Image 1 (cartoon, rainbow, N blue to C red):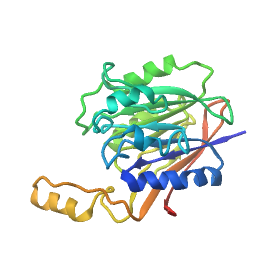
Image 2 (image 1 turned 120 degrees about the horizontal axis):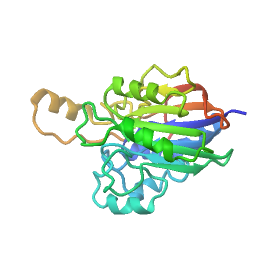
Image 3 (image 1 turned 180 degrees about the vertical axis):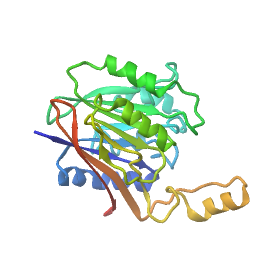
Length: 264
């Protein structure tokens, strides 16, 4: 019997947080998803995370939270993450950074789900270890009894994301791209049974530029001057994907991406 997992794109600000808080449970029910992963690296004011913001969405309706290059943007989160066992930071950052880059979690429908959080290197400012080497290492550490493995690859370059998906094809259930806030139209199942999409998208304002105020972004691009890019918290769109998979083999059979307006 196949199971369904819901993966929610980058949550931006209070508006995105409220959309997930109020709508994700219904989406889980509609798509019969027994597990939910959400990228929330922009949940606190559009940059970073706080324990207070995360408590609105995890452990319900999201079972696991992933992050990316903005994980430490909020002061004090480096201390808070130590008590948040369902929140991941990228696995290929320095081992001296707090938190975990992957984890194995109980799926109430069947067995366990492993979630790996990685960050890319192409066009990214962060100094990180090779994500490919890190993925190889982690797969050796995950118990062989765990077949359902989902990877959030937070990266800028489409080529790097596609390369990771093919690198892990047949070894993980899905490689799901995040970071660009723009949902791509390439959701597919690779030959080895791994689901892939270059980018899930975001939970942010439909009337914005990547969740930010249009006028502010235009001012920054047209003048080249520093400018505060305020988050837009109205007219929220939810980008996500549902992955159908066999928990016995860990292979995916279908991935469906969708983008809907939040009913708040």
